[in-house]
Image (cartoon, rainbow, N blue to C red):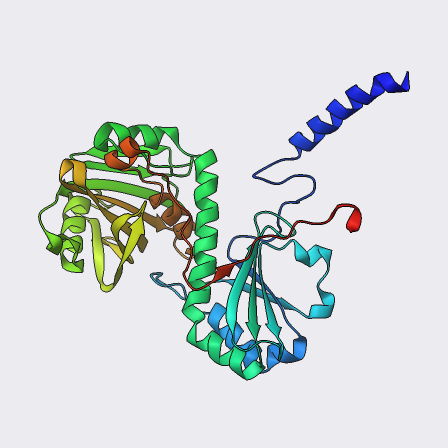
Length: 358
């Protein structure tokens, strides 16, 4: 009688285990705690108040570029080493300074999903607090960029599972492209070589625009040319709430840099938009890419409108969607979107836990 129960019980256990899997988690690897861009530092209380800790805090406490008001890159919490227990060990982003004389130099290391998923634990090994503080000060942008990219990659993975099929279909119809944006972008407007998708909300309004134009030469990728093209498309397609008003680029703040998307060159532009003739504005981020197969430039841009509220998380959520854009050549060659990390930070393989605690 008991033998006959073994197989059904085994199948029930396997089904339960499968049901507990979500996003790579199992009953053995719980979901991580904390919200995006939250950081936990595990560091001795006294050291946290000394120059070593202050250097790390100052690195994490920098402003997010491209926002109309001051917003911190991360929400920071700190606990003493002695308080670090299972409840804290499942936090999504952890930094653990490891300051010991056994080390000859300071360096970064990180591991993934040690106690939960998704999770990244960065260890900063250093021979002394003085060396630690100096190294962190010199590499503070590396730390910020690393965890920003980690969160961006997580958002991209979420968009792979849940995205707006409507916007994806429109992008294919108009540009022969594919893109994954949040499902709540359910409203749209089409124009000549232009698509606008929006949540159409009064607050926390998310927006995506895609437009294209012929590729001429390398001068296409100057800030001046970008503003010229952007303003011409926006004026023609995005009128404001008042007669004669339209979206324009705020030229007082523009930051552009070269990046790689799916292994190819792209221009990233961040800045502020303002409604000419009306009191509206907010941040935007754009990816300018070359569609070599069709001799054109394709611009995918995200912008948000959220007056009087924080904008860091919503603009970064939309920025992640820009990385999912697949140009015709990407689709044809099945070019996968690779996870983008920051150079100079060594990844250590996750150590498998021994069975039975051994």
